[in-house]
Amino acid sequence: MLDFIFIFTIFLEIVLTVICSKKLIELEKKVSIVDKKLKTIYTLTCEINTKIKGTIGKINKFVSIITNKKLIKIRQIIKITINVVQIIILIKSLNFSKGLKSINYKNIKRLLFAQGLRQIIKNIFINLNKLTT
Image 1 (tube, rainbow, N blue to C red):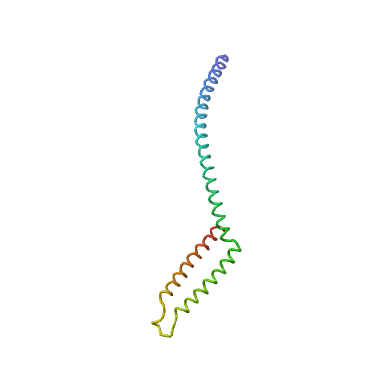
Image 2: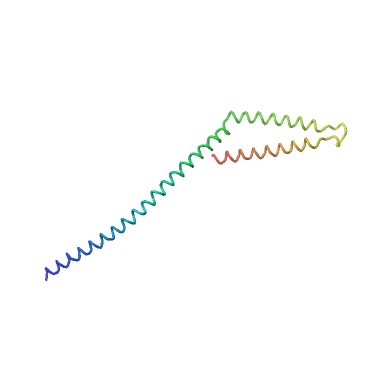
């Protein structure tokens, strides 16, 4: 009787080993498929990462030029000169010798348009500085 139990356990062990081996082979195939997918995702992610690094580097160079201290001083000087020129044009257009009819409204419209455009550009630069910090 004991021999029968040993033979039965050996037979059962062989059957279980075969079943486990088949399942391991199936799972290995699934793992190899998932591994290939992960490798393609990895290569795509690396390519996208290098492209994004390049564009961020270009943006950082552009923003660093804008935020350079020397350029900030030059911008301030240009702002002051533009303001002086606008004030001179405004004073010239406001010739009150003939009353309100002699005011040159075209120059005033140009000054208002230039001032609005300057404010828009200023807001763009401020928002760029906020994005980089």
